[in-house]
Amino acid sequence: MSLVLYNDLTKEKEKFVPVREGHVAFYSCGPTVYDYFHIGNARPFIVFDVLRRYLEHVGYEVTFVQNFTDIDDKMINRANAEGITVAALADRFIEEYRRDADALGIRPPTITPRATEHMEEIVSIIGKIMEKGHAYEVCTPSGGSDVYFDVRSWPSYGKLSGQSLDELESGARVEVGEIKRDPLDFALWKAEKPGEPSWESPWGKGRPGWHIECSVMSTKYLGSTIDIHSGGVDLTFPHHENEIAQTEAATGEPFVRFWLHNGFLLIDREKMSKSLGNFMTARAAREKYPPLAIRLFMLSAHYRSPINFAPEGLEQAAGGVTRLRNSWADLKYARASRGESAFADISLFKEELGKLDRAFFEAMDDDFNTAAAVGSLFEIVRLINTWLRDHPALPAEFFDAAEGELRKLDGILGVIGIDEAKDADAEEIERLVEERAAARKSKDFKRSDEIRDALLDRGIVLEDTPTGTKWKRKLGQDAG
Ligand code: AMP
Ligand code: ZN
Image 1 (cartoon, protein in one colour):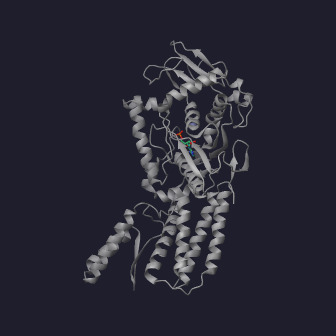
Image 2 (cartoon, rainbow, N blue to C red; image 1 turned 90 degrees about the vertical axis):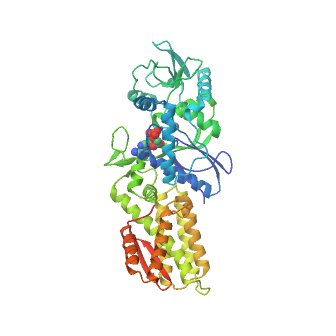
């Protein structure tokens, strides 16, 4: 097996081979922490978390860096509107980011650097780019200085977005107050303005432009050539195009081996975005839908395809999560209640499981096709359910193989929630099931019915069997 990934730089699927054997240097553009992130932003956070888990699963040591953009126009405007400092705003929304990311099962990156904590390095890389003749300083009317990257001095500019300089030129905009030689040039450093935070530099006080932070934080923690750089497709141009030009101008080395861009999450066929106002925050989404269902929804499409955010899709995913969780619960219950028998022949089960497992990994290896991999997971669950239904007694080997498989795949996709540190909901349900059993024993049927009805209201159905009471979530519901 070997992983093949579509490389946005070459527009081809390529065999993934990292620079350093056994190690993957992976950088993903993180959130601008001026507000809660929306469910469109959650797409790259979830899918690239799964790619990272997958790389780890197949044996790589992964250094996964995801930055926090804690200084830009949006940060400054929002902080001013709230009458707080930019730093206080950043602290608050980094905290809120972590809360939502945790709830969505997104593992903390290896390193989460903040732009404002890298000013020295930012100033130093800009100096290097100027020394090499690819950036220039312009005096502003206020007496300060801006520094711009000289795009025309960098012949390979446009290689990621696949456009010529002239094509790009026709779409370029000059922002108010920018005095640059060419509309294509972009700011590396902006002169201080009243009411804005600023830092010292050889060009006077100011703050960095939008793109330079990612060049600095990726190369600082991962080296001058990194294996994977990812983000949403809207970052291809200009953000990533600019990152390539300025980083390669500074280091003289190829910056990134694999560029990966996720497709948009759409709503009513339009990109979900803050500026269009058509967004739902991840906070609101996870109050409405189980977090596991949000993950399953995102992973049920190929990461490069657009997906439409609609209630039906989320409800379907919630039903899927319930099926997965019930199968896991049935397995554990069957092992505990039926006892094990050494006599059943499970060779056919193992053979079919092996095939489906291979299909799962082949899908993941084929350009990280989680959509097909999720399909294999559901076939595995169907296989397990069929064997449980058709065989009153099964050997320990069956349970070991089935549980091991689900645990393994859940470690990669995180859609069953097996290893969730605590399933508070399940604990509470089990407590109520026990209380009901005690009530029945003491013939307090009023109380036992009350508990059954209360659980039913929560979508939990009870089934009394000779070996005890079994509980299940009704399809379409999930504790999350
Ligand atoms: P931002 O905080 O705006 O820089 O966005 C964080 C990440 O979310 C970036 O990788 C964006 O490309 C990505 N992103 C923003 N909107 C969407 C969307 N509607 N669908 C998918 N990804 C998005
Ligand atoms: Zn970035």
